[in-house]
Length: 338
Image (cartoon, rainbow, N blue to C red; front, side, top):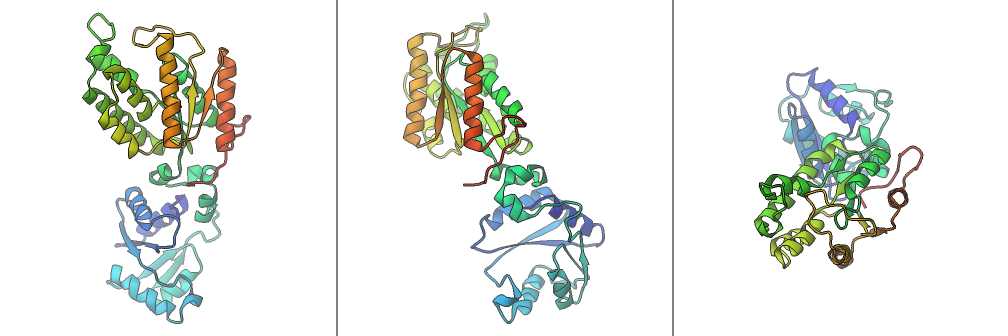
């Protein structure tokens, strides 16, 4: 555990050699990754195979209990009561287990030649073995870096730069797309006064759904251009008061692991969609973001200054510092989840 390409290779090999295959995902209360998650990942990864989940605290090694093999034989027959002809695995214990089940053992790639990776190595450093992880399990290990701040401070540009640097994907700000599609007048001018709480909740939920859908395809670090915190700030600005629904959503949300808050030191540029160019309003957006992060106990760095190149360098530097980056290669290592 967690499931990786070696496990998928083993299961697909076995499925080609039998008429009926049961893959048993075993878990105990003491394991670092909940068994129900590993079971769900395997079912998503192998929909054509019967995946069963056995969660019980039974001996894990022959030395743990004198009746070890009898205990396991009975447990396995509960999940596969029909006669067993073949037992597949990549560990030496498969030979003895097959004997107990009156079956033929088939040891598949025990030397890890085809896929040189192990579950313990992945748990220690998921980023290093990211491509070996089963795609459905990646969001569990993934870290998120989110950009907040006033309009026209370079969030979108910086998100793309960070994604390229770390070899990952950037979740774009959906709010801008929503505004263009739903909130612009026929003359192209913004209709800021027409926003409702329902609009902003729909915007937030769509952004979250898009991020969750793209997460398995991203790298070990997902870059996010704004999130529900930014939407809540916009709600307060557009509606004149905080949105109770969005505030409740924030309380139960899976928020980013680290934030970069961009200051309004750079010039505001009116692109026809932006609303808040007043210096006092921009400062309020920045201050509210900081206050919210502090209230929520979330980690962040501030990106300030008037030089775009310097702002970018600071952002990359902070991201590397937090997530253990390498400026030259863009490769990075970090243990997950915390």
